[in-house]
Length: 96
Image 1 (cartoon, one colour):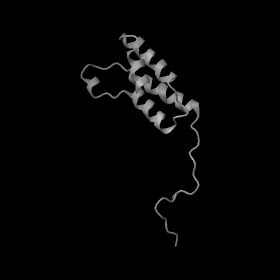
Image 2: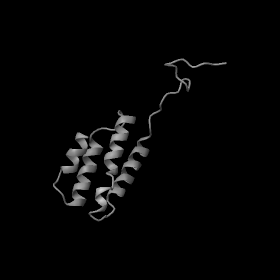
Image 3: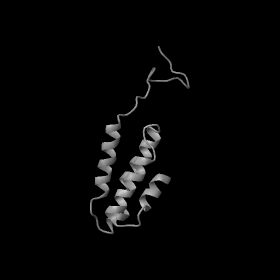
Image 4: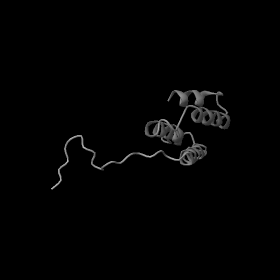
C-alpha cells in the first residue's frame, strides 16, 4: 500500500511544459473578438472583459511567456475600436 505524505507530489515528477506562443496568441485573439461583439448598455453590466481575464490567466499560469507588450497593443486596438480615450484600455491592462 502506497501512502502519500503531506508535501509529496501526487503526480510523480510532473513538470509544467511551456505553452506554445500560438495558443496564447489565438486565445487572446479570440478574447478580443469576443469583446468586440456589439452589445447594448444593459448587457455591458454582466459582459466580462475577456481580454483582461485571459491576460491575468496567462500572466499567472505562464509568466515568462507573456509580457507587457501584448496587453498594451490589445488595449490600443480596443481603444481604436471603441473610440474611447486613446490609451485608456492599454494603461489599464498593462497595470493589471
